[in-house]
Length: 410
Image (cartoon, rainbow, N blue to C red; front, top):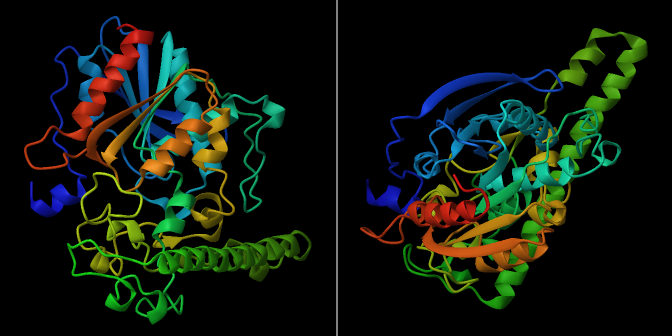
């Protein structure tokens, strides 16, 4: 493993799965007719199944899969209809995907179903628990763009417990901290306002790899400007959605192919420079054990300008449903009061996406009467804090296994 990969912590070696594991692949149909895929790894006599999902990523080979199997639990890993391509990720539709998986597991006869949300999977499952716990008539009927998503008609089995491992506060809340407010022109990836540039020495940025020191005044002004940039993109996204909706309404009477084409045009948003949380480079802000750098590497002053990052390319509908802190329903703090199942929250002390203040707020917001908050040493993706140290994933697995064992003995 290279030092760069160690810094990002995304590539963690997994243990071998038990030889008696039976692995089967499944294609499921959602209540709105989409197809999603999942892999069930079962063990003889297993009565409890743990589900792993993420709204954007393939978790088939998540590092916790063998850890859970070795402790006697079946594991279900599932994608959404937007796996590895979140150009048009509508979180409300992702709930229908999650529901299809929970129906499948219920019908397979598992006595206990536990959700395990890591990173963005945490908010996805918090959102699912919240909506599944409501009476069908009280569930959401549309995405923030107005697109109809009929959660009321969906069979949404409520899981028996929820585990959250390094959950960030939701993709919208996360992006608002990450987005670079110094972008002066949305169409120009290099445009910059010097007074807001997080990587300018005049604003407190130090030599890369050395913790910066941003003044409280700059931090406040920077975060206000981040919110303002999100609001500007919100306005543009809504304008593009409105244009498509108006063309769709015209087509109902005009039947004009021009209107039809205009209603279908996605008008994709390009969002530059989204790897610029000040806490990546100033380790004194909301301090924990995190190394210098972002989720994508040790040089956010460079990765911020690169292709890899959150929300680089997105439809207006997906922006409003997933990436807008102002519009999204998939916000952990909004959803958490509706999570009433017994819950375990595993905080990784070197996390650069779920900071200590976040973890405290999220744990306090959970609606369950049985919430356990545990901390282990590791980075966001489950890497070690230093070469040779135990991985955060292995330490988290021990805590998760202990917690599950107390409630659902294997």
